[in-house]
Image (cartoon, rainbow, N blue to C red; front, side, top):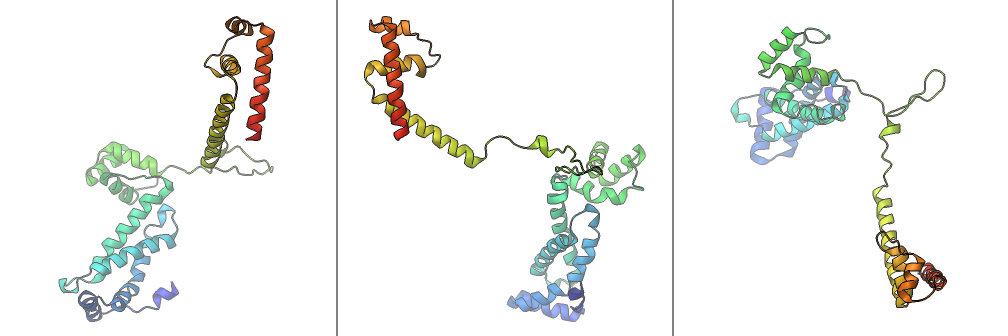
Length: 265
């Protein structure tokens, strides 16, 4: 604030001369002088938005962006002082910033909602809940529906809830929303690693199966690798005309071979 107050205000003649230099010669030094001489205007406007709970420094930065846009478009030949022209751009940037960041929720999305958002507080006669007559009066003045006034008042009066647990007077940690909001599904990197592992295992299994003889492969597929695999040892014994014990031996030997091949891979 001390730095801002150090920049002198410009007279109408000085402002016109600097504006002409910027417009005709793209003189950036002139633009800088126009900007710094109006920084106190940005601070003054930012003070009017402190009720939204956002850092004043952030509001001032956004307002400075609006001021720079105004200086870029300023035409001194129109006979309008920069302070009058810049107010619109400064407020527009601050409004956009508030809408984007207030309570981390997009509170106002339509033009009517934005009008309500930035005017409802100043139009209320008290901090109490609006009664029906006030709702009708505000709706009529802003040309919106009464239910839209009610909805915006509800949003503005909402309270934030901390996601983190807080410690009470007894030193115990209370239950917090973060406990049930936590996403227990795998992170993208973990999901990708699991997927790659599955693909490698599937590929390794396919190669291992291809190394078996036809009968051993048929036994394993019928017993374990087909959808709803339910073939019994006796079913396969009848198919290959051998004993059930022989099928069990073939299955066990094939499993050991596949296990060894996949571990080696």
